[in-house]
Length: 340
Image 1 (spheres, helix red, strand yellow):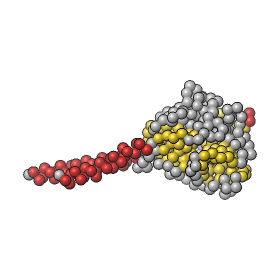
Image 2: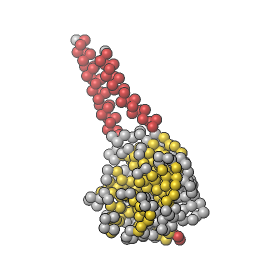
Image 3: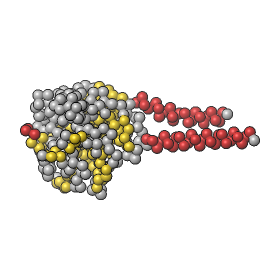
Image 4: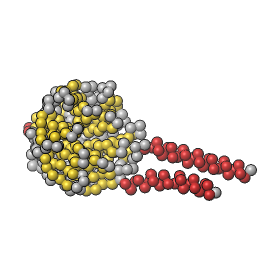
């Protein structure tokens, strides 16, 4: 009997650990960004998040650079961008921030590539992107920058890759579903492009790009179709936040785990669209965005922490359940044998 009780204790410990992790999911409100805005972008370099451009509450296009220090949870400013831009794409690599495309005054699409060196607090310009567009998304994968989708007269499928070593662009296999105001994230060297819209219709598309084979794969759709959303990776999952339709701003927080699918998570405290997000350490930071559909603005900064989803996910629970069944079967068989 003592052996059986000991085995039950061993079993109950990992189970209690799994359920205790649920207390580790939550939101925290931080200091607001110095200026309200939406349709800006952010990218993290080490323990700082750089927020660039966007539209302010005076409908002014911004070239400001705001820097959020995760350690001190405080804001500072950097050297402004050479251009005023909104709806641009951003990505970081090797200590530099890359700002691609976007809209200039008059909603004129840009093909510019602006490069910010955080060490020198200075800007330079790279080779122009082949296709001018705004409301696109951008990510670095294996040292190459990919600028995907967007809008220029209509929703785009362009997938154009920039090599910082040669300062040159190359056209890649196009996005299967044309869309704008979309989100993206990189997990295990695979680039995921999620949501967005085509015209006025929100998209639930979830498509994965393999940069080695230059091919796309259509995956399980986003449960809640939305545009003006943002996505970041944490703990082996892609978390997709916020967005808008013509009727509402979304509070949804849905996580995608490859091989397992979508799992609904704790909603955003304040629904927003046109917001930015970046992961630093064990948390995702969500910044700015509009609280109602269309032109609205905020300086809201929130930290989202989640340890509910381990990298091994459902597989761990299946292994644990199988172990429990095996131990119970073994102890029961041994007990019956001893009776006889």
